[in-house]
Amino acid sequence: MQKLKGKTAVVTGSSKGIGAEIALQFAAAGAAVIVNYSSSAEGADRVVQTIVEQGGRAVAVGADVSDAEQRRNLFLQAEAILGHVDILVNNAGVFRYFPLEEITETSLQWMFGLNVFGLLLTTRDAIALMPPSGGSVINISSLASTSSPMHGTVYSATKAAVDSITRSLAKELGPRKIRVNAIRPGAIETEGTVSGGLISGERLRTFLETTPLGRIGWPTDIAPAATFLASDEASWISGETLLIAGGRGI
Ligand code: NAP
View 1 (cartoon, protein in one colour):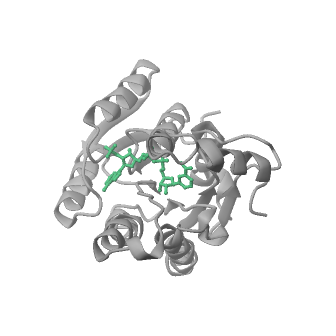
View 2 (tube, protein in one colour; view 1 turned 30 degrees about the vertical axis):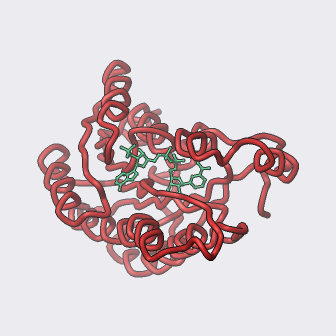
């Protein structure tokens, strides 16, 4: 059975990594998907092409979701293409680790601007398009929201904010039948973590040693949980933050 048959979804930052896999699995589950990207039009087009080849429905829409004007355009297009939005996945996020003395206003604004302000304002704009029957918002947080790794001060703080936003909005939006949940991935092999050198060398060894299931994660470890949380099977689940990290961080 297709769990998301007849539903519409916007997945931010789905030109690659975790977001791309969520978009692919949502479409396979029957949803019509807006594949949002910021700079990688080619990556987004590849995701859309794969979906269409498999008989699904998807359209790529470019928008930096930390920018008010571009976000406005994203939802104008979402309304024109999908009519309404049943599911929003706030996946777009940036991560970088640095010591305290290297933290600048620019780095703070960059990470908080997307991971927190962008996520919150994207949610505000998306729920305006959710029908009276309700909807589902899924925020991609991180294990780092509670593990608070050294040099991850800014990133961890943004994801701790995401967990808090998830719980507050679950309370506020519940009466409108909108569920709000978060997924907290552990270390996942993606374009972002590979190019950032975050899952190699000493760091990778530490991940493997401290992960009970003894391996790094993949986007395919995350997307099925997003599909479940987006589906009617999760209709009594809201305000949850689900750790998916191979047993790490428990
Ligand atoms: P990734 O491989 O770097 O991909 C990031 C995606 O976000 C890309 O599609 C990128 O689009 C998009 N994006 C970046 N800035 C954007 C913006 N301003 N507006 C719209 N889209 C934007 O990242 P990932 O590793 O898959 O991570 C995805 C999410 O999972 C993030 O929120 C991250 O914090 C979280 N997470 C990741 C891990 C991990 O180990 N990978 C662990 C825990 C949590 P363009 O390429 O078009 O710019």
